[in-house]
Amino acid sequence: MIGSRGPALVRRLPRVLVAIALTVPVLVVVGVLVASAVLVREPIPDADTVRIPVAPVATPAAASADCSRLLSGLPGEMVTERGMLARRIIADPVPPGTVAWGGENGTAPVVMRCGLPRPDELAPGASVLVVDGVDWVAAEDGVPGATTWVTTDRAVYVGLTVPDGVGTGPVQDISRGVKIALVSR
Image 1 (cartoon, rainbow, N blue to C red):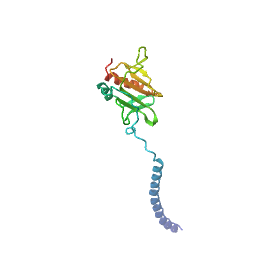
Image 2 (cartoon, rainbow, N blue to C red):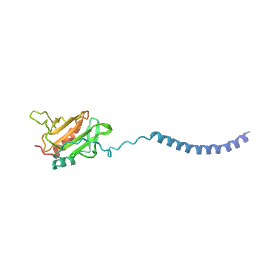
Image 3 (cartoon, rainbow, N blue to C red):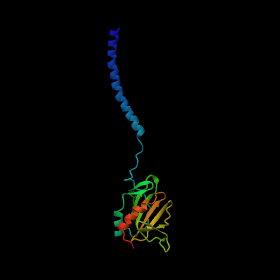
Image 4 (cartoon, rainbow, N blue to C red):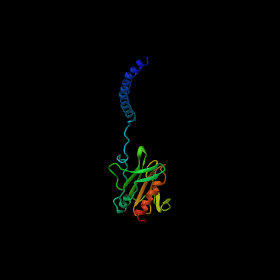
């Protein structure tokens, strides 16, 4: 009896090994195909290539040497209460003297404009915010859900539109650049 079971087991063993050897690679290929079909999603747009639209605003002094100096020294990222915002490419036509950060996933970007005309809000008795030695006044520009701050004490006027809930980081970051690049009046 022992002798008769032994050869049968020996004959079946290679068939089982062959079946396993053929089945495992097939299962691996099927698993990879199923996983790739499940995991494939819509590609996420690259923030470095998606251009964000920014409304044009009159910036008569945007071509000045002062604005060129300020624009060349601006940060690539800025700190906000929502985290770091990367500098973005603005959609054509790019308004002169304009730079933007953030604006991903339908949120409003932080927008800086250099070379603005004198703000109407700059009048005797205006409430001025001083950040890192730079004077700012809140301007009424009609942008809902945002505050626009305009410098009051520099050779050119710089505006910074900051969406609500972003915090004071953008004003602080831009104040540092303004202080370095622009002479006070």
